[in-house]
Length: 151
Image (cartoon, rainbow, N blue to C red):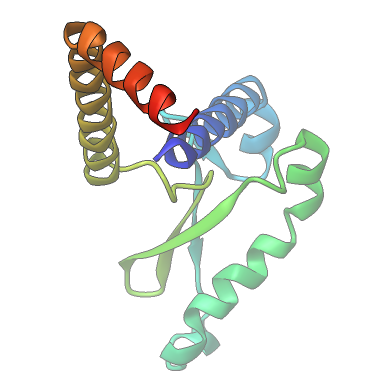
C-alpha cells in the first residue's frame, strides 16, 4: 500500500517534468509536426503511404518506425526515457501517435482502493491506541503480574 503511494508520487513527478518540458519546447516539437495538449501529452498524426494501406498487419509497426526518426529530438529535450507511445487509428491510413509518461499507478480505481486500505489501517491503529489508553491500568497490572510469575 505504501509502495503504491510512493510509485504514484514518482509517476506524478515524471508527468510534471514531461509536461513542463513539452510546453516549454512546443516550438521545437512543432517543427517535427508534434503538438502538445493541455495535460502535456505530445501527439501527432502519421499517414500511411499507399503501398502500406493493404498490409494491415504492418500499420502499427510502420507508425512506431516513424517515431524512430524523432528519437534525437526527444533525447535532446531529456524526455526520451519517460515517453511511452499509444497508437489510435483515426481514419483509413491515419494513426494518432500519443506520447505520454507512465500510467501504471495513475487511475481512479487503484487510487481509491489504496486510499480505502490506508483509511482502514489508520482506523485499526486508532482503535488499538484507544484501547491501550483506556485499559492502560489493567494492562500495567497484568504485565506486572506476569513479570512476578516469571521471576
